[in-house]
Amino acid sequence: MALLEVKNLKTTFATEDGLVTAVNGLSYAIDAGTTLGIVGESGSGKSVTALSIMRLIQRPGRIESGEIFFDGQNLLTKSESEMRHIRGNDIAMIFQDPMTSLNPVLTVGEQISEAIQLHLGYNRRDALEKTIDMLKLVHIPSPDKRVKDYPHQFSGGMRQRVMIAMSLSCEPKVLIADEPTTALDVTIQAQILELMNEMQSRTGAAIILITHDLGVVAEVCENVLVMYGGNMVEYGTAQQIFDQPKMPYTQGLLSSLPRLDAEGHERLVPIKGQPPNLLRLPPGCAFAPRCAYRMPICDDPVPLYDFRDGHVARCFLYDERSASQRPIAVETAPRVSLSDVAATPQAMAEKQP
Image: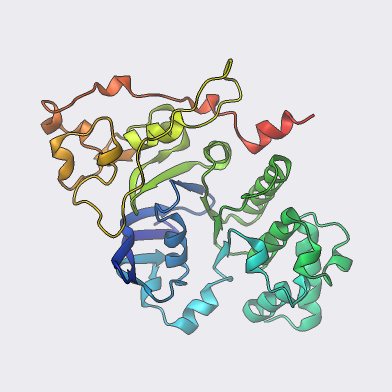
């Protein structure tokens, strides 16, 4: 049984203009000791999915339906007091901006110690000792001194390390990292990712990595989930997604990826059009208005098509009924090999003078 399983999750937000469907029937699972990358454009529902798992959706947001199983228990049936025990203890989250996630009027030591005392029952002295050990573990120099510093006294990369130390202080079974390397230079990105890998090797935690950076995904993730319009449009191993993408949206993401080995001044190939209006999602494929392969059948609800070995995609191109409607041969779609994706923090860091 999977450690964490999301089934038919639907999360909405009530606005003056209507109901925004941020997550629309999403399902996936992750096993212990593995890393799942969730990718997609801004507004595709990646962060809302993570907040739904943590039960941190606040009004006007609402989890309308679905199930979220952790260790066989449905988190959506838990009380708020039960969720407070689970958050930070069993499931932890690294948020996008550590400066806004950390309390500016408390020292980093106080903030990490608070979680340790709350979840592990340590007294103040033992919690402080463990806090120093955690700061040392995430490679913060002079941790016994820096434990008394405030968030503004740390650089962006160091604040992210503090967030990782806080998230891992109770050795959670699931770590959700929402854009953990955003706004960091490539050398620091590489260090943060390596740190997360070290933590996973030591604790066996499952990691959900939410990111726009496909290079990072290619480097650290075993499996990849591609989201669009609040739902999964493709899922598979990193090898499958990068070497044999099936969904035109996935192909578009890979075609827009900069290549360090490109000769001359090759132009990036953008995905034309705009992301879907979540107030009025179409009944069929949400990507159809931007898709070069659009067919009449795309206006119908799209099932998942199985390509074996766990690789699935939500696209009518692989339906026998679309044979007479297909405007462009599938074989003409762009392809990017996993080995060609050189825009990783590690690769870029190696090229730094």
